[in-house]
Image 1 (cartoon, rainbow, N blue to C red):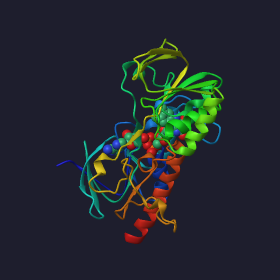
Image 2: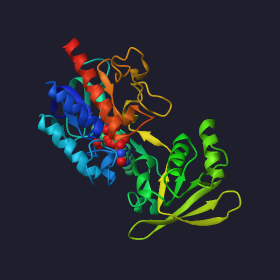
Image 3: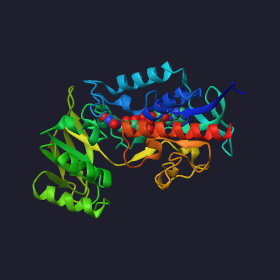
Length: 321
Ligand code: FAD
């Protein structure tokens, strides 16, 4: 059997939600353990400049910001273990038991902060330019394309919302969607029509992306293919935003915790009495960050729910232990 690690509070994930939860929990003397997962620092380490983290940290990269959060958690004596949880042994009631590649963990309370990952198209040329013109977050990276031509791929709410957002920043937005109809809400489509009329957004439907073109500096264009008349177009541009959905890292919990239809962990966040906002359907198990948030998915909102989860866990532990 694997060696056992015991703690009052186990935090799964080392993104903004996990580190923030650890900082709060450690300062409350809960001696938390973070299990980092394979991706130490989480999604933010994939991006270069972070300009929307409050406090004005000029030119800070995602990696540097997450290193600072890591050091902050360490400073308050959080125990940080490079392991990934692969099995749930007991989630019936506290004490909970989970197993990682290296250790077995027994704990009175858990915060799940395992994040999410964006869906990509799966093209080789796309992989090559991630972070060099290919992005999955217009709110995060759109600013770098002020007065430039960009493309958005997708037809759901996120794609249309971000097309509207970029329509205000970029000189032109090519909206590329594989179907003729959009699944986004009517109100968004109404706004979209106005920007199309004003030539800020150009529609390409039903088109799929064949290749992303670029050089050693970054993206220079996109090759798209019509599913109706087999026409091929090459559009010169500098940024491509792929918004075809995100996948929460919740597979491990799907038989045990309540998830919504997209796989996001459901917490008590909709409760009006506003107590234990982050608690799942199992008392003592909390969720924070992108894994429970299908709406905002930002570093700062993940940190915010990480903080809430630590405070909720503290309340649970004080009451029960
Ligand atoms: P994540 O950052 O996704 O971290 C999840 C953590 O869980 C990882 O450490 C992973 O290793 C761990 N994990 C997963 N499974 C397990 C397991 N089984 N056991 C243990 N650990 C596990 N937001 C902004 O606010 N500003 C930006 O500029 C910005 N830019 C972005 C650019 C890109 C390219 C992307 C993809 C996202 C960007 N975001 C940005 C969004 C932001 O990164 C996320 O909202 C945020 O990182 C979510 O934080 P999180 O802590 O919930 O999860």
